[in-house]
Length: 317
Ligand SMILES: Nc1ncnc2c1ncn2[C@@H]1O[C@H](COP(=O)(O)OP(=O)(O)OP(=O)(O)O)[C@@H](O)[C@H]1O
Ligand SMILES: [Mg+2]
Image 1 (cartoon, rainbow, N blue to C red):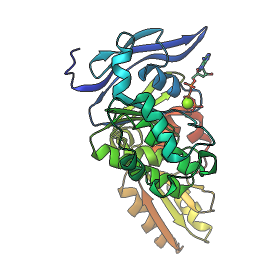
Image 2: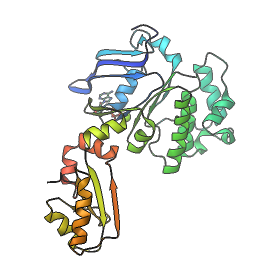
Image 3: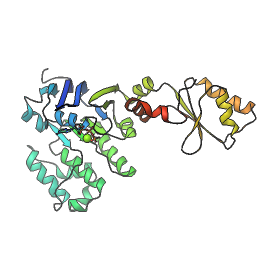
Image 4: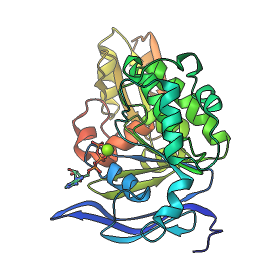
């Protein structure tokens, strides 16, 4: 590929083996410039290994990785100034302040004069400029990690689990920062265990397990093609509702709140169930019909036994 490659990242038949273990097993994908690509997968799936090969830290056993038109194994030192990395479990020096941390990393990685104030503003850490690293909360440490990843104004930013361990508010604050980077045209390559994060941020997600890509596409397409059903939740104290739904040939169950859930493949069945409940003289106090989310797709693809064992979501008869 040439330097003007339309892709930020091209991965062809990438494999990484440790003795008998294929941590990454023959994966291929492309990431366009300005795209947000998320790698999802259970612990040990090979996400960090993949990220670290892409960002030149580890060497592939076989296969080819092209970043910004350059081969990662041949052009490492041309690539490094153009990428930024937030490693899994980012940590920095306890006793130096936010501002000093950014100055320090800028001296290491930055060829141009860094905009430290701009970076602190971007990740909303301006009022913490004089605070030592050890006194920052987990969420603020992660935000500092992102600012460190951005000191060289990179074209591609790799973020390995950027929001793990953060509370829901801090996570959303991080999404804001990442969303801002996306709007600036950066290519983002992230890994996450949070499905809503992938649904919210990613243009494309790849689901990996045991080093292999199981499914890839936009969150919407993955849901459409892997979870072609509706989840209906009925809130009722009336026990006959369960029996009525069961007699119709569906497989209702109870969720953790004690509400009846049933999986339907045809939207029309919602109306049939409501009619049958009414005709049976039963009542319900709440109804919720929703499409399955990315989490359901993830569980289906990464653990085939999960849905079978999960009460209330069996395939409709
Ligand atoms: N240096 C190494 N030597 C041997 N095995 C390794 C090495 N690094 C990773 N592995 C193994 O490769 C597999 C993939 O690990 P990796 O860290 O890429 O997973 P991950 O998807 O990032 O997991 P997590 O979600 O827990 O971060 C695991 O089985 C891991 O034990
Ligand atoms: Mg990892």
